[in-house]
Length: 493
Image 1 (cartoon, rainbow, N blue to C red):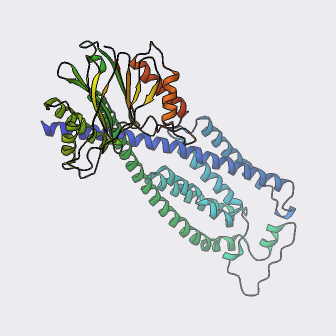
Image 2: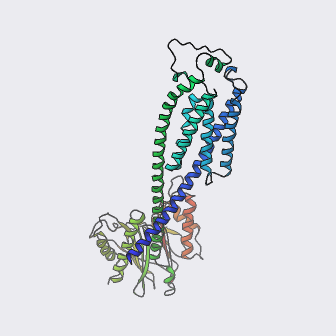
Image 3: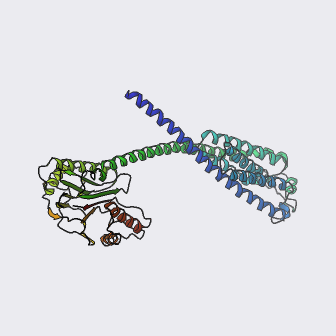
């Protein structure tokens, strides 16, 4: 059965992988088509500008030949049409890459008829661009077609006397004098010893040298295409891994939120209090947690905690800390928060090789009369609102966070909540919320926002939402830097 599931998982991964690879190749092909269309357009503009300058005699009458006009006009037209088609299709088309690179190769080869001794610099351009598609076979095809077009155009240019003569490749007797008599440059050279037969016989020198250079560039381009293909497969695998990790993190986030208690589960049992809590992790999973549960029939335990660090490691330690604190509380014969956290601390210190620690505020309240006992193990100061008065911070001596050192003694203090009194505990994500100017929300703004939004009709849920809204407004679009967790308890009896 395990092998069956494993085989099915591998098949699903392969299917997802091939779909992702296909999508990446399609995206890359679209981008490459648009890139070549831009190059075609630039090439067309340059050739058009050269044609205009040549026509109006900018380069001199001796360099003008009427045969150049239709050839250059055709080059401009081909590149312009291809760029327009590609832009209209937004680079999408099954056979668009063939059209794009063939038109570019053809245009360069036609230019080779006229400027054979300089075009070798750009004849390799289609081959280099073809490697951008990350397909070895396609690069080989483009290299073959471009090479053939270049060789054919070179011979045609020499045979019909289209191309300019490059004297570097001619072996002439010592002392040969070539007279160039403007304006007929080509006829002058031909009349002084470089005839058609001589041009064709000596052309092999130029072809061999340039072809060697072309072959080397083509081999390099094929290698680049292969490297690109491997990169595509690696990117596909990374994307799949990220998608799987994102899915798993979403599941982990849901599991973590499901671990936190729902305040509505307590309300039907007791009406002596109103209780609400909320957690907004900065990442998919967080290190904050809150907890509340009955200890016996008349007491309720409230826990607010913040684990050092963020992400999955902090979330795992958070789950451990939550379970340990609740388990020890429910199995303890004492309602002393200092003793409960002392035992929990010793347990969390065992095997804590990563040196995680957790700040904890814990209280156990008698819901009948509001009497309680609390311990603050390195956590934020709670906020108290007496009935009919304003919210204010409650400051008292803190103890060390849990998980740092074993056998630590924790301080505790007693308090009493009267009817209508409200208690708020939170993590440092609230006062340390930052805005775009990197300013912190701070305790003063936190208290001020609570008092401004206070109302007799506010429920504990309203109070939490108002405080969260104040932090969001203050952040003004800045990214949440830390988990924001808030718990509000109001005494009704």
